Length: 422
Image (cartoon, rainbow, N blue to C red; front, side, top):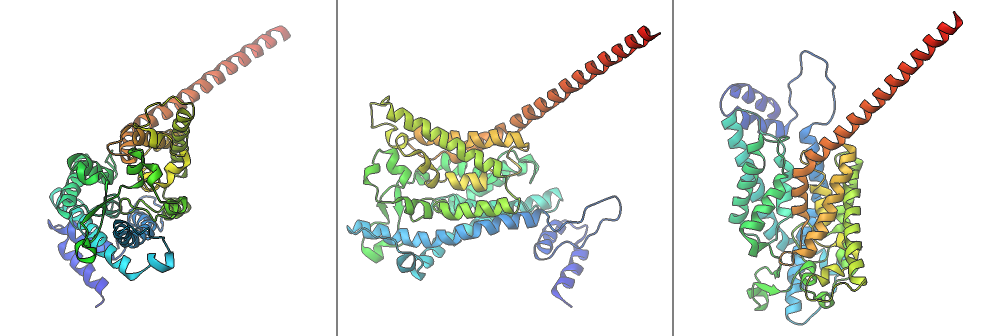
């Protein structure tokens, strides 16, 4: 008997029992459900929620693999910098190496395992308690979470945050499709407010540096946004190419704008994500960046110790540093928590980009604002859609009123002409 048939028989045995939702989740994860509809009209399609989630994960895999190489590269680059050596990146020479990848596996893979293990455990518990099927929504959230946290985040800290995010960010609202806040960003917000010193990004993590070079475990050296927030941009040694391709320090999956861009194009091509949200968010970030550059150019800022570094940062370069690109492509486009109307998506995305850059500049203690901007717009998305729909209704009522008036006038003219004829 094949594995598929054995699982099907076991599924029949578990039907109606308390643990049935947990077993059904395992069965449908390995094989497509074998239930068929028996009444009513329905459309047969190749996609479902599980396949949609898997498509997003496919778009995230290149970013995850790159982050593993980059973890090792930043480790060795930080050690070289502590010894007074500036490491020049060479993709085939000192980046795509087994040493870099092995260090990345050691640090990144546990984050992925804990994220999925703890999150799915909470999902299974709620499914058994409520008696409903395990939902596939956490398949993407579990991959996003380890990519938006610093690489040295303690696993116990991540576990607490995941429990909080799944319970408070999703389950209390009714589960997948009912939540108003992005669960992955809810987890990130919890870490930010509960453990701010771990989220500041003011140190470059180094793996086991004591044994390798006799240096401390954390070597001083901020991320690019950290440098700019302290008005020390002149001390940076990163080129535009380094920023775009991702050979810079940062949270696990946010560094490579190039791979994030490819992932965004893949999601647009597969019709999973909205290009309207992505484009409008980019425009919003550029507009806010241009405004700050204009303020600096006009000489309105006299105290260069406050905000000046990020305000004078070239407006379009905001898109290739920090988590802005990652947030726009993989977070803002969440179909559950984002705006649903086409016109609303333009407003929703624009304000995400606009507010993200604003928070970067005016929050020097933590120079990143994309996750806060997205969470804020998650709250306002239903309001935006409400006014868009209300506006469309009012336009239709106005057209109906005008059509009624025209019909009435036409009828009056016809009656008048008939009377004159008689």
